[in-house]
Image 1 (cartoon, helix red, strand yellow):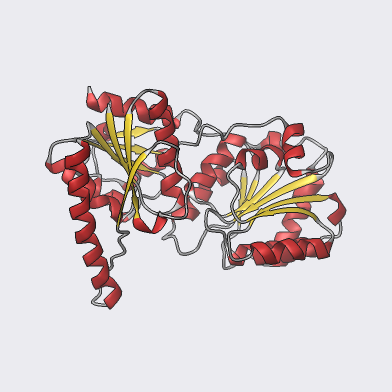
Image 2 (cartoon, rainbow, N blue to C red; image 1 turned 90 degrees about the horizontal axis):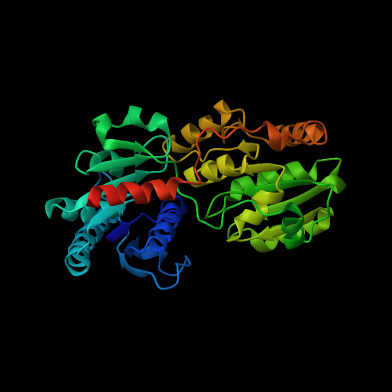
Length: 360
């Protein structure tokens, strides 16, 4: 089976696509990945993978220069997408969201090639809402997503959000050694998503600086590029044992030692937290059209997460909540209190199966 995969530019689009590609490769499929041009230098792809770039598209209803340039990019991307379809001749095409995928999926629909969408978030994006009416199948990560899509139930399939094969729990002793951490301390993982979050970095650092029991802490902080150098030196001044990363590919080690995660609530982060059953303090990104709030509510309903809206979060509130989590350690073990409502580790296999069914 020849599968063409097209994705948007965010990590929330790309990482699930790569997870599916890993599974398809294991099953002997020939895969071609199409990415937005802006990701050319910023992501490590699977060795040997066929791939191409098309212009990233950013459009809105205005006559601004940026929007006119977006229209031009869309036309160029549509032309390149047509050439990719004709050259690769896929049996099925699957899109992972964003305007950059619309033209390619349209050409596939026009040529009567089987098509599929995957929606990572609870609330679908605009592109996937539009495309859902035309594709043959829509895979969703959460049952609640069906309430936002005006399509027949037969088109929908609940798969969960695919995770990379490497994202499995590591022996805790091995994971502690990976970070050169001691045993018996409270480990916090802080991450603002694939690009990092300057505001989240600042508030988390301020809250940790105000804690009285700093010696009981060990921090893994995925900062993003902007704050990486500065935060590393600031932790050293505080005397907190911390490991900072601008980007951490081996997140399985971080999740395997974390007693608490403080994070944004992108779809991939939520899926990873579900899989590793780690309690979390989630601060949804406020400019994601409500997507991250809805994602966070899934873990809140499962008693796995506390939510702070970005506008209401302060260093004092965060410090108090961290102290509350730390006080529970050693009693029942807060990790054991977390619940996994959706089994996400098989999502890539389920998606691969659905693609094969479309091609049969």
